[in-house]
Length: 142
Image 1 (cartoon, rainbow, N blue to C red):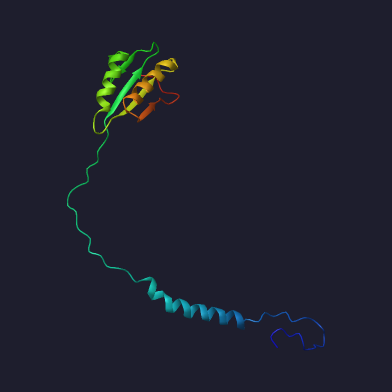
Image 2: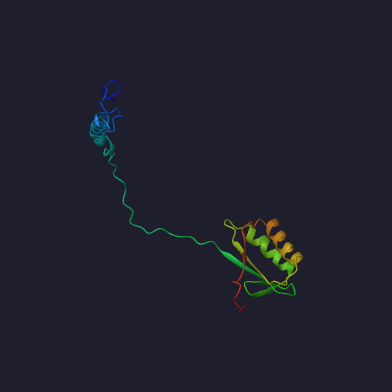
């Protein structure tokens, strides 16, 4: 008997050894299954892919650096510009096939209404990619 429950032992103690036969049977069945299925995992489809000799071209989008100082003065790529001239330039840039990104640099003391006017003008012109440029906490302005 596998469990040894019907035998009477003289000392009356339960059987303390593990029957390994079912464990070995399960392991041998799994081994046979893996031996049969292993060749199926190595089956691959052979493809002849074309060879490319040219280098990939990485296109970087055009960027406009728009700076605003403490007094609210605007600078288009480090050139002073008025709010109306900036709106006209935004309209020209918005008509291009690939509109540029705007990098907005504003001083910490700049009034929010100036920043809101710049963002609104950019949105009206169709320029929706605006990034805010900041400086690390310990860095000094150039």
